[in-house]
Image (cartoon, rainbow, N blue to C red; front, side, top):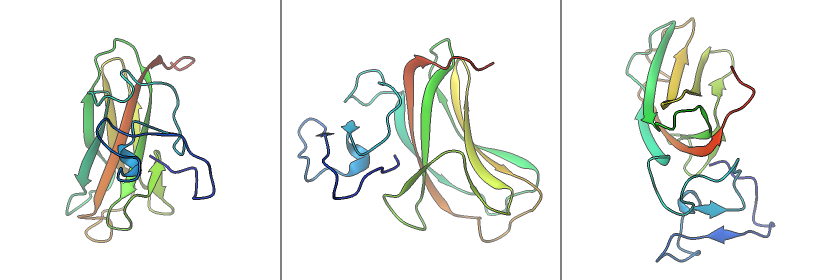
Length: 155
């Protein structure tokens, strides 16, 4: 999740049961005031199918004008729910997350997410250029949360 704080902020942190606040990594907190939350997921503090972390390595060749499915998460809620997805560039730094959509200026390569009444998809979309190095074989992490509130006002 993206950090919105530094060490000068007062924080509210809820550590997982059996863990101490001092020994818990920021992304493992079920609730942490230093991160952006857009609603309350089912069973706050519990890990379920509506929240998780996905590892992804880009292909060794990224074809031009191609969309790659990073992950498909089934939620089965029957409506398009609010959600958030964050990306971590694991080869660049650890514990630094950015909100999707996320791209590289001038490359037409970006990551995004979309939701419908049954699934959340995380996608890598590539535009005009084929990549055989640079963006290939790179490791990413994706933290996602699906909320119990429907997206309204979208068609």
